[in-house]
Length: 317
Image 1 (cartoon, rainbow, N blue to C red):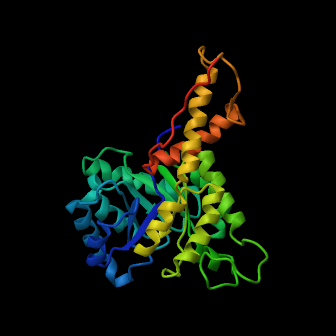
Image 2 (cartoon, rainbow, N blue to C red):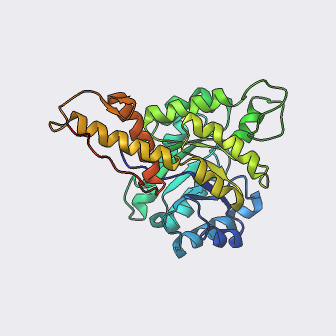
Image 3 (cartoon, rainbow, N blue to C red):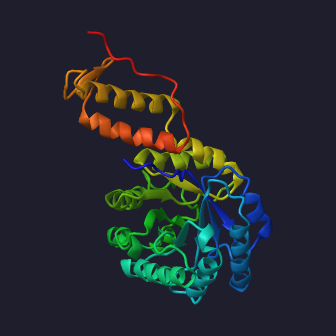
């Protein structure tokens, strides 16, 4: 299993506000995405591009994944977003986020444009990743093709607000359960996105919860997608960051247990351990399937910076 770059908390920062851009550097989010789309009014977009280039090239982002969300291909702004941001700050940028992705062709078009800008500015071709945001019924129908549309794809993201509008959902509370629906109205959508992301081998990220001061409600919503296997969630307010970092990381107990399973299985299958296909870890039988499950939890724990608090001792005899 490849080592993950943690994306538990994905902080949205309006590109039109230099004060917010500066404040975001010091927040404990795993990823920041500097927004040229919904958080920027049409007249503010040209200045926002310049703000973002300046913020990226000034540095100070530490280990954060640096992403810029451009406008979607149905607008007049996408091309200029890409050539200005990548041309001005491509060396200081990790990913471009493409919103409202409808089909694989839109991802491929961004891939080709990125390659041209990279060549024009002497940047390594293909280094900048793409994050595809699923926000419409058509995008969800095509999510499997979108996930495999480009080798640059790193993340598939759920965009709940536009998606709710796309399917005429009878609710104005973005990302939350509704008392009139006996279940989770987003479960099918989240699972479709998760399956496409896992089939492609990339991360799946849940979208925002707009009631930014209700951290308890944010936790409730985040736990649902975390339990399914999502890697992280957007945060719109500093108060949501700690909750996301906690919820999308394994607990200390689960992380320790996963590492013990890996150690015990490695020992049991070795010559010293008898080259067995299964073994006991306390009262638990573990085998190859157990190892695969433990790899997931251990990988997420390592990416989150957890340290072990237990160690494996081979059984005597």
